[in-house]
Length: 216
Image (tube, rainbow, N blue to C red; front, side, top):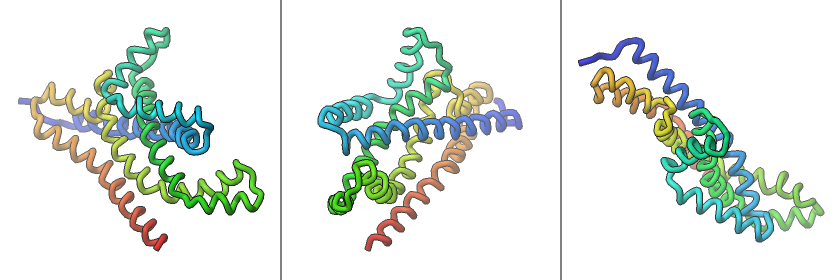
């Protein structure tokens, strides 16, 4: 029977840092793509809305556990050598973009139409109406669900172990293979995930309550 030592704990801590890093990559990449998805679905021409709708349905209908190996093994077959971190970052960014894009599209749609009409009466151009009138209100509405969705991003990084990326969950599996103490190891892993996710959940609920109070 093995036991946990300082080296094991350091390995878990390194996995935790990789989980945080991958989560930030996924949020940044997915947020950038998701913003384009939201704009295309909300203000684009008919062909753009149809294309965005197809993209969202395709990505949301594909399990992340399938999307990860598609990227990791698919790009090398096209001549692009890619590291597990890059493959995980691309796959998660694409996956996250479909969900954040839909969240933000709904938030843009929830801005009263009268706001756009008032901005139009002020002779503001389209980009001025979007940037200075619609987006500021939509961002306020979108902040609570976006922060809440970050919890899902953190937890979904654990699936990156399927392509050999060593994040927190995979680090726990590797240590368990040498110590054979799954209960202790995965209790620690669960506690570390909780330490990452619980503050985000609390922040999301507080932002949601403050948003409802501000709009009474």
